[in-house]
Figure 1 (cartoon, rainbow, N blue to C red):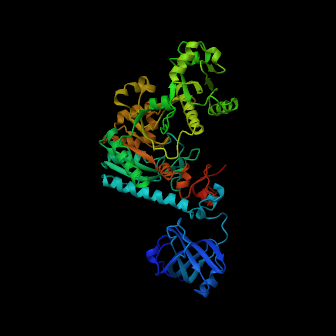
Figure 2: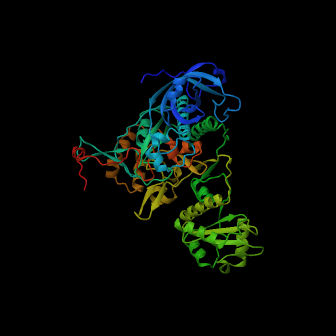
Figure 3: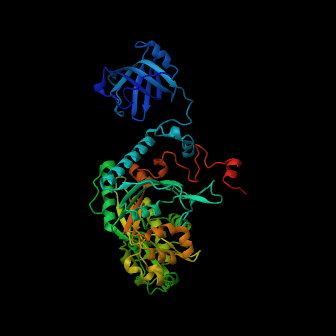
Length: 588
């Protein structure tokens, strides 16, 4: 249908436009008929403008407006006026004016939507994802995606101004499963062979360093076929960064520069000049996490020295097996009931703990089921070590070091929620975590895995330990943490083919397997690879945190559900037999 091009958006008009003839296009957000006068709130992504159909002003337009319903798409032409005294809407940017309609064109009708297009919508997430095109009309969702757009532009401007080159890497690549499961794509032309969708552009960006592009970045799609949760999707976006002839400090400086701009331009917040650093070991021992939330205290305290001579079997066994005894002080929680304590015990048990030791601090003693197994000296030393006072509550977990610390870290976060330790206006907490172990041991497969990835460089001084004592080798790896969320991770890479071969050997990857999976990278290293390193930001998670949301689905235009389904277009879906035959695939 023929319509005039809009002269303004629905968020443009102000008092200085009063008296002007304008054309607006948009969706009917709300319709009210008050004594024969019809009021329409007209919406587009820029805002809302009230338009008025008054029979005494234009009877034809008023008669036509009787057909309007929610979500009709219309074009209106008319004159801007000051709203009558007492009818102003200060919640709208356009709330001091409205528009008297001379002409209405209905561009498209709409069925009644399954939920109101409103920020306070009371509809399940599944329904909103099924009708995502309607959900995306909501101001809150549009605001999140516009914020994401701004972050894209800030990223590109920042890296371009620092001499980085944006280079696209392939979406169809060789399968090199060493971590999460690959998504595989069958080849029609090469029977029985498959491409993989990249879990990250890791090998390509290292090859770009070998190629002489000393500063690369890319905002890139990555794919991992893994179990999902609120902050994971099968496809996600990274800000991918790599630099040649650098060390850790150069990468930290570049990343911190970007973070300062994000905080200033998105939140109008001046980020502190120095982002604190913790080693992996410190982070685990003090906070029970390699991505600790430092917006509150509640530190873990290692108690091995308190109980080094204990006759209590649980503690004695743990110490003799190089385990850890870790404690947590919950101030003024000594009045927790037995039922509350049982709930917390079940909480840690579900995470894999054998149980939870708790103690109420009294005037001159400890009230606890295990108190009779402890000497008076141990009790007093425990109170002193945890700086406990009467009315406080103590928690103790013991066992294998990293697992036990991780369990206590989860309890720390749970207690922070229960004790309301994180105020709404808490200062943001950024942190570098460094000195990760290079390897982690998997008891089930009886082999080492790379804690980050197989191309992470060990500390130079630890290289001799790679064959003799791999568990002691530290990586030149680092993570950036924001409010308890890992938002970026990277490392200095291995750039020497001999050291890379040593790394593969430690991981149980034989020469033939290494050649088959990574031969192209190993060959590239033989032709003069520069020292290099980089980092990758989880862009979805970063956008989620800056938008103040708790799920990355809120900042992705077309997300999948927690089980990997797209409810809107019903993918994944069956394909017909002819397509499978063409791809040389048969489904059992």
